[in-house]
Image 1 (tube, rainbow, N blue to C red):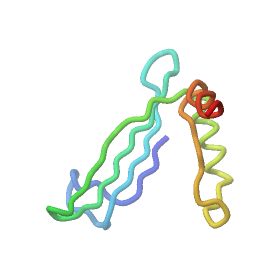
Image 2: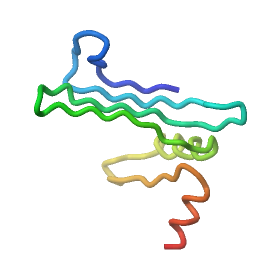
Image 3: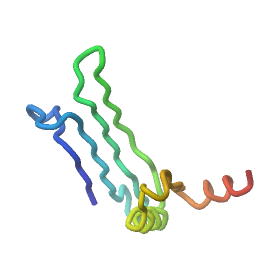
Image 4: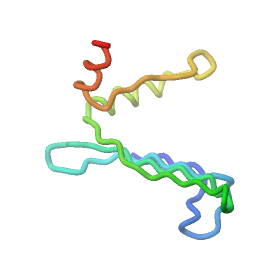
Length: 95
C-alpha cells in the first residue's frame, strides 16, 4: 500500500511545494511489516528539510492503524495514537 502526496524532487522538477510518502510493505516471509516515510519541504538551503525513515510494525497493528484512519475526523479529534506492536501498547498502558 502506498500513499503519495506531491512530487519527489529527487526524480525531476517538483510541481508541488512539498512531498509526503507513506509506503507499507512486508520485509520477510513471516509477514513482518514496515512503513517507509519520506517528508520533504522542497525548500532551498538553508531552509531545506528532508526526513526518510522506517517504522517496523506488526501486520495486525497496521490493520488497526488503517481502521483508525478510515474513521478519523481531525475536526473532532486532533490527534490519534497508534502503537507499532502489542508490546509497545502494553508498556504505554502501564504508565
